[in-house]
Structure formats: structure tokens, C-alpha cells
Length: 246
Image 1 (cartoon, helix red, strand yellow):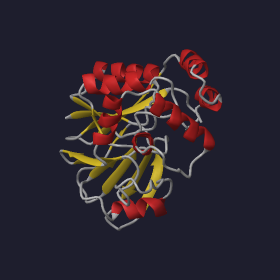
Image 2: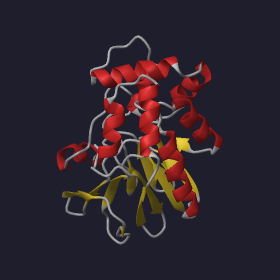
Image 3: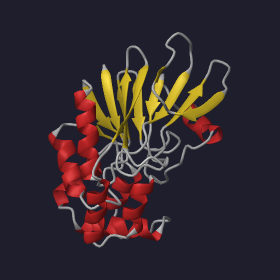
Image 4: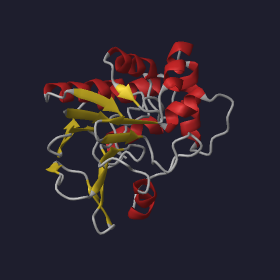
């Protein structure tokens, strides 16, 4: 199966539709999302409706979870809190209920999908996997050979090899070995708010049979998206950072 993986859309509808078109043009058999459909951007309703219309299976991200939990204090950046409250005010209850219905984890064939880390999949906290130490806690719990996660907005590949050593590298197009006992943890990067200093939308195609990874970076209307964020009255930093890719 050629599996298309999206993550961290963050209400960026222009980036979502651009990446979706790139994945479908590449002949994906199925497209899934590793969470954070909403937050930061100005078009959360359109992003939710698009995923539902195209039957894109999705796990719950931290911003999705924050959005359904009203009257809660979050230990996050003030601009993120402002964006969550704005999102809550601009979604119908039906769309909020859909976010609330999303699972924290799902499995497709030999692939696990989670937003942050298997270390915590109950919404209580959301660990960032950015180094080998934080990846170790995840690998202790990863039962499948392959897993995809989001949350960091950076395309990364972690390998837990037969000697129980963990390595980390920037995710690029390559083919993963199918002949040893290694486990792999992959982050496709962010559709709607990349943080690897590349402003293009990020997504991945993964062949579940061959282990081949294809990294896709897609241009989209960054300027128009920035204008939407500013016009909506959202914090300006959420617009300006898009052109920097951080």
C-alpha cells in the first residue's frame, strides 16, 4: 500500500489542499493524518470538512484536544492560547464533536500512527520527540515495525536497531531495510506550519511493502494564508512565521 501521511495541518487550508493534490497525483492508495488539524490558522472548519469529505483517517493532536476542552488552563505560549480560543469560537458543535471523536492512536497494516509519543496517549501531556533519549520511551511501547508521529513539525527519522541503539537523522527520500529487526519512527513534518526553515508544505508517501519513503515538499499560497490569519484577528506571529518556515 502506498500510504500518504499528513500531519500538523493547523487550520492552513491552502497548504492542506496543495499537499493533498500532490499525494493524490503521486498515486497514494490511502491518506492519513497524524493530528493537529486545527490551531494557529484561520480556516479550521474548512480543514475539518475536507478531511471528513475525503475520508482521511486522523488521530487526535494536542491542539485538537485543547479545542474540545473548554475552560481549561494550558501551559503553552500565549499566542497558542489565543488561537485555541479563537478556534473554539469559530467551530460549530458538530465539528468540535468530530475532533473529540478522534482516537489518540491508530494502526494500519504494520504502521502505528500517533501525534506525539506512545509514552502518553491519553491527552494528559504531549511529549516532544526531538532526540534519542525521548525516542527511547516511545520505542519501548512501539509494537509495529514502523510508526509515524507529528507534533515537532520537523521531518525526522529515528531508527532503533538490532543492537538496541537509536539513531536520528533528517527524513529524506530513501528505502528502509525490511531484512533486519530494526524499528523505525518517522515524522513527515508539518503541512501547515513547517519548522525546519523550509516554508513549503511537507508530507510523506510510505510504501508499506517495500519500505520506500518519498518526501514531498509542496509550494502553496503562503501570502494569501498570511492575509487570512491577519484578517481573522489572530496573533500576527502566526502569519509571519509561515514565510520563514519556523
